[in-house]
Length: 91
View (tube, rainbow, N blue to C red):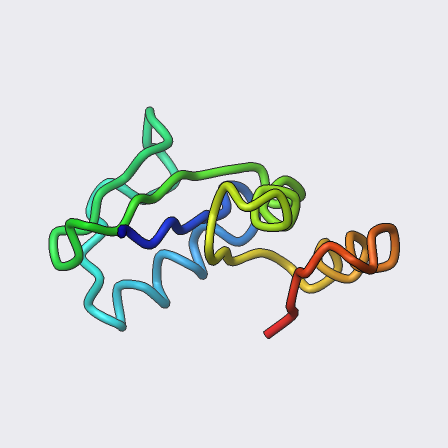
């Protein structure tokens, strides 16, 4: 079973790309001028990755479409306040 990862576009893209590069994820297709939203990891080929607007990431995770995501804490907190039973966990 593949892990499904939701990554942000917009304000956190550069910082997220840098973090994943330091962790040696090898996401060459994940950068500010990318033309598509499904980058692949050379190192982790079984990970399914999709790029979303940051505000949509906690929703995608709460719905069970993705297992893990990176976004601002404000979006996570907002969703938890609106839907406390969502099962979303802020790390």
